[in-house]
Image 1 (tube, rainbow, N blue to C red):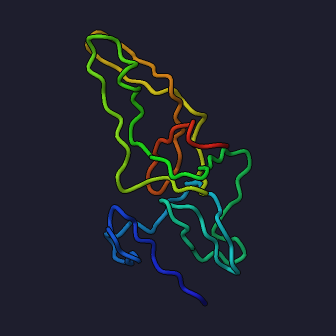
Image 2 (cartoon, rainbow, N blue to C red):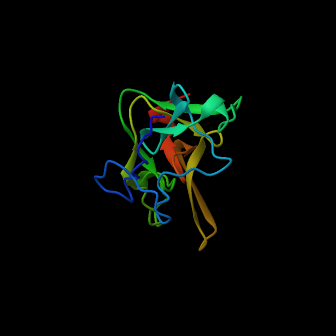
Length: 162
């Protein structure tokens, strides 16, 4: 049986080629109920797009997976696109007098060209809320929430296709 190396999550193993099987190394594990896109198969092995990489796991006769219908799959095109942990509007979309919150892209994670991930819901508008003044700011951009690795992250709907 061919054995593929444990996935090295870039946030846990900067520059490493493989993760470990140590208890504190959760980088190469998935949780029941998560949904991923199959990237490839080879014999009893299945690869999924996971955290910006093609990650293989042993899956004899498909016994460790359940096909799902009617899910939204978002795909990157020819460019790597950024991923976000929050969905704030552009600074120019805030009313005068409100200090814009900042949307920053993850520095260790991105959505590489040619990959696909499962969207957890239809795209939603960027937004922010200010308790003082009970003010809700809605931006013009739409973001998908996708299952990326052990987390859900946001990707700009304009950067991907379904």
